[in-house]
Amino acid sequence: MNITKLLNIKYPLIQGSLARISRHELVSAVSNAGGLGILTSVGMDQAELRAQIDTIRNETDQPFGVNLMLQQPNIPELVEVLVEKRVPVVTTGAGTPAPYFEALHENGTKVIPVIPNVEIAQKMEQLGVDAVVAEGMESGGHIGQMTTMTLVPQVADAVNIPVIAAGGIADRRGVAAALVLGAQGVQVGTAFLAAEETPISSIYKQMVISANDNSTAITGITLGDPVRSLKNPLVEKIVQLEQSGSTKQQLRDLLDGSLKKAVYDGDAADGSFMAGQIAGEVNEIKPAAEIISEMFS
Ligand SMILES: Cc1cc2nc3c(=O)[nH]c(=O)nc-3n(C[C@H](O)[C@H](O)[C@H](O)COP(=O)(O)O)c2cc1C
Image 1 (cartoon, rainbow, N blue to C red):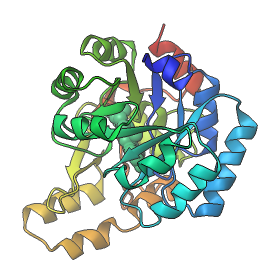
Image 2: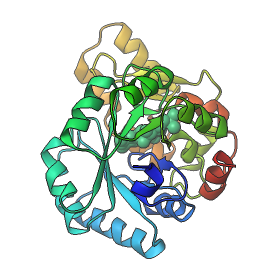
Image 3: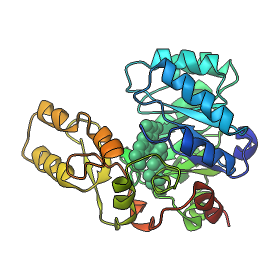
């Protein structure tokens, strides 16, 4: 089925979940503008997730989704809330939604996992998911190994469910390219870091809009969990430590709490400012509605 019909949205655009960042302010703005806003659940307990969902429902009557970052320790409790609240869409990252799929799907929730390769896309199709987001390693945050350019057409050929392209899309050229590659829609993360409504430190937004094509680096390769962020003293330190064979514990100590330092404190030295390679093309802070309408103009 067509992705706009499936999700009941105007534009075939999902705002990718942004850990600790895509809270109700951004989600409601995107959904009100005709895309699908996705609420992060990272760091939330049941009460906070319930409150965020209720706030979104007060701010918009349009569909929205919630993301489960499956590395989080309290996923079963969060799923209970998603079932109770009958959220329209759940996207998942960093793992398989299989243990939670039936409870969500039977409750009427569309389940859309983010996948990094063809094999996992096919497994997800067998599980019965409604669509997949094929995310290339240009993306900000936790990444796989394939590029959007190579991943999207291969996934589109391999499955019969809708494919949504993610990674490196920030304007209408990116949207057009994704559709030509066989995707039915796009998921966008980095461009929304610079949305007016996005509740992050102003330093984070400034770092995104002043980034160029060469401003990101990948850390966490030796931890088996590669993450793309904007280069800063923390990232440079970690890259050096990984090259010199430091212990996993040393790296974890540096990374622990570093996203919070970026999002809330704007700690330019020690924060982890996750963003994708397309940050070089994101040059202005503007309302989410404008970001979306320009992509589909
Ligand atoms: C700051 C940041 C945080 C992210 N957090 C999550 C997350 O918690 N869960 C998830 O599934 N994807 C996460 N992503 C990936 C995005 O949802 C999206 O797929 C990706 O940003 C798309 O690529 P782009 O950055 O090139 O637009 C994150 C991306 C960024 C930039």
